[in-house]
Length: 394
Image 1 (cartoon, rainbow, N blue to C red):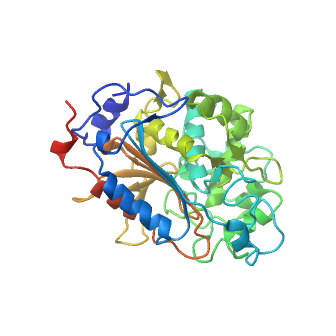
Image 2: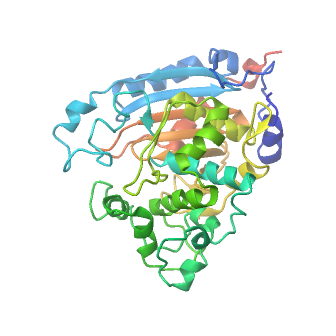
Image 3: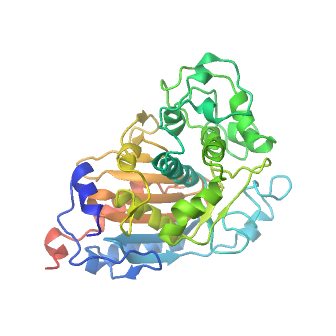
């Protein structure tokens, strides 16, 4: 197993007894391909899920990718004529933040770069870890406003007590609502922010309603604060910083990161990647932030990032915990624990450490709520594992 991977599994999770028979090449320049059966998965079970996606049983799914033991074992893509659908659904003028503009959604200007939406938040969290490891940010306990010089503070003492930890865990105490109305509704707090000229100032201008750390409230604007924090702390914009210190070491050389009207990267939802490159970020988590022997994330950052910081009350049948911009699916008798980056429209980076598995799903379910959830995909992938005896490779 790759350096660091087994250690992390033993430290944090119950390790899967089936391990690779030989070391796996790092996929910096391309994945090693393998059959599902060679890595302990049933191709028929994966084919059944593939057929459901192909038929449209789960709405508009654009891709499915599964990596086990570092090898790419399953990959599918599904084509949809989004431009034709957008013709009758565009809200207002086409543009970078219009969900019905085929130049931007779900693919970037006809390329294979797919919008990640709020998975961008999880990637931004990795950048904060990089900056802490490089000692450009002191710690997650740093007060956020101390790294937001040049912006107007509200004067509320609770805002002054807001730490980066609170920003990372969606416990800022800021009044915000992007859950009760659709993102395409101008009343949505995120939509209002995206319609403003200065997103960071818009967020800071919102009232504080509770002491930081007391309550989880999903707030995309909180992650946009990190765009300004990274710029001030590192002297680099998030996309340039990511290119040098996160993406390039992993062999990710093609991406797009949208900019806000003030020129800051949209760290709350503006990143585009290919599915294979998104999978590399999942492998970085599995390897405890080490890539090809080089430490990308500081020691302990992955552990702290994927530890439960707060519980999220949503659907009691689909529980989540939350870490540093990572959703966490709690372990149950029938389901292994999983780490999740998820985004609007069906974007998903699913990491299952005890299975040494990474899966990526992309889609564009913006017309209706998709039946595809992390719990659903995790259950289907879990059911695809062959019996332990069939996984033995020695």
